View 1 (cartoon, rainbow, N blue to C red):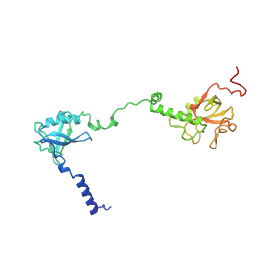
View 2: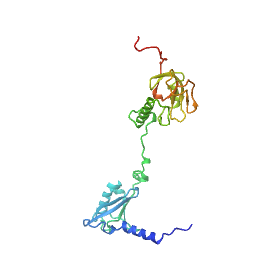
View 3: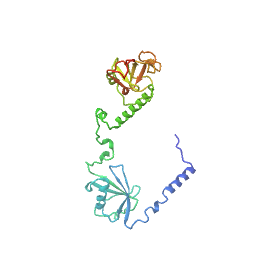
Length: 275
């Protein structure tokens, strides 16, 4: 496959961009106090680099190592320093008694730290690769019991939304449930078929006739055959029949809005004003 060669215009643009980016390189270190140097620092075990670290050209290599210990964490005894003066021009700063001036250090050059410690914490990404850090993992059951967790807050918000929809008499919809729902086994155990129950809104009473998912709705639902015509259907939702009852005697409610227990059918002739 033929290589794409840049046009003359593209070359001119790249040269112009380079001149713009490097326009002040020649004056970058003007105004610095005499004897001061700005050097970049790199480390053999670290991806991180330090730019324009301030040194004095009269610092000995030992003093430089002591300063670099605070940046890279490698103790003085385990450091080998190299001065990269541009391109392939790299020299070993072997004599700790000699100064940076002796080795010809200039602002803009780079000092490279070679960590010789075989037990260094920074080896193999030990100080930068967070995947190597042992993390505390809480058991899902323990997390589920917390009252101030994100999961508890989401569950409370979902239940509040479900109660709001139920108060408005709405049928199950695709937005009515979230990922933090009862399992089918939990719902079946909590709402046995044939159990008497009371559901909101309106404290309507009836019998549990279905427990499980509903077409086009998320989560678990309780299908109830009501004692009175206070429902929205006949046990059918979106063309699928879940249980049988007369029209307006069926409803689907979220588990949070259903209470199972001793809820006998109300006497329509009873009065709250009589004993």
